[in-house]
Length: 414
Image 1: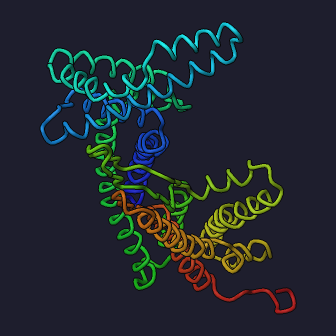
Image 2: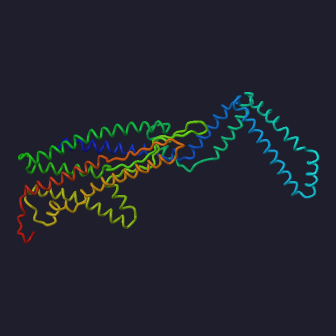
Image 3: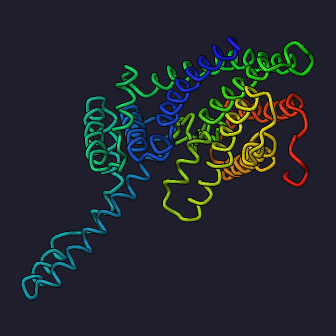
């Protein structure tokens, strides 16, 4: 019993700490701060364009293509300028007609168009000089910076900044790695504490079942205290964790490799008490009824049964009160505890299949990018402790009935 108490307290402390750190880690990794964040895309695109502009070189292989595109641009500029001037002069009345006549007489557009190849060659020669290329790059970079400053997503980074301050980190990447290591360490320590706890429970159960000396009142009291420890932790600790994430999203953009890692799409981790709280505070009448039922049959009745069992064991006689007998011997048939365990397990199987199938659809969506998804859903410590309580409760009821003997009341009163 001392081992049960010590491991229960330690396991509870480890799981609460791990859960808090896990919540911070999932928040930092949320897809809304990465893959779905306009600011991140803005910074990524700006950096790529700046690198491309600063490293732009005119070589023998690309010179002809650059010249051709420059000529097309100059031809388009001349045509656009001529159309704009004609439209403006047409709207200006007589004065515009005079200006248009003078422009037609003095400006030879065909000569300008014929000189486009020479102008393009001059521009290329200008751009090939290192000092001029740096100057042009600076102009483009300044324009990109102005565009970047005018682009901003509606993302509130207050929670991210709060997490970074709380863990003493300067950037999200290092904080994520730090939290990941801490969460994994706490998970392993929690598993290491759970096995001694379950082993102690199994030993207590075996002694009560197969050892006559340990099957008396003291042994049953120890079993009840063990069931209480399992029930408290089973109700308070998370039972199931659903997490869907994109482990890697990589593609080539303008010849540069762009990748996003560990983008969490969905994460939920709830205990039974938290589920009850959500159902009771949601405001929906139907969910309120469900919340009351779960609270009654999975929390109140199990605790009432254990208290009634303590009273029965202490008195060493079968209870004569109907409600008392119901709690000790029959409440298990009406309690939703065992049904809830099966429901949670089936829900996990169903959620796991849905998440896995949807992640596969994401992977098959496009062949232009490399998408590696992951489903890190799993049953948590609370599930196994609650399951252990249900099994121990069945054994406890049978042993108490064996200890107190048959119902002393006449058949007509039963």
